[in-house]
Image (cartoon, rainbow, N blue to C red; front, side, top):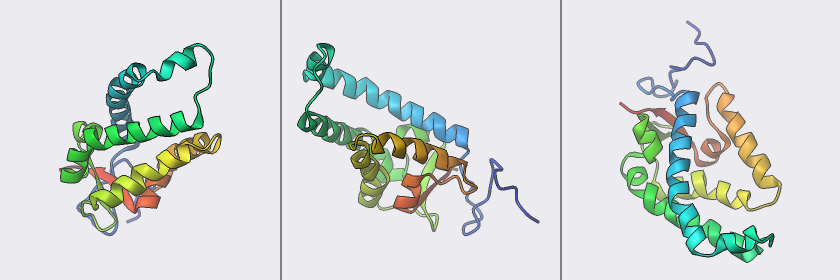
Length: 163
């Protein structure tokens, strides 16, 4: 019996009891996580004066950009760290009943997941043009048969339905 490559309930060959999360659910989880981060980071940036120069047409310095990327990543770690460390879930994944697992189906090591799955993309995102290309390509990779984005490939993870 041959499975359809893009079935929303595609079974993972190595661990048959795990079911890959659907593309729509993954997008929904990303949107929830992005809204949570925006609700926290944008006011912090406003209070930190980031937008004063931007609103007057002054491009932020590279040092300012790096600083705010680090602040954003630190906030992400604080906000998403507990569910990621405990269950391999962000708040968005938890809300939509998904979790991140390694290739054997186990919860990935927190530090490895944080640095490889999230940190690498943040660093690439700081490079003009390359960051936008990476984000676009990373998003399109979800349409592969195994639904693994570039950040999944880098970290050796996949997103499955949480039961």
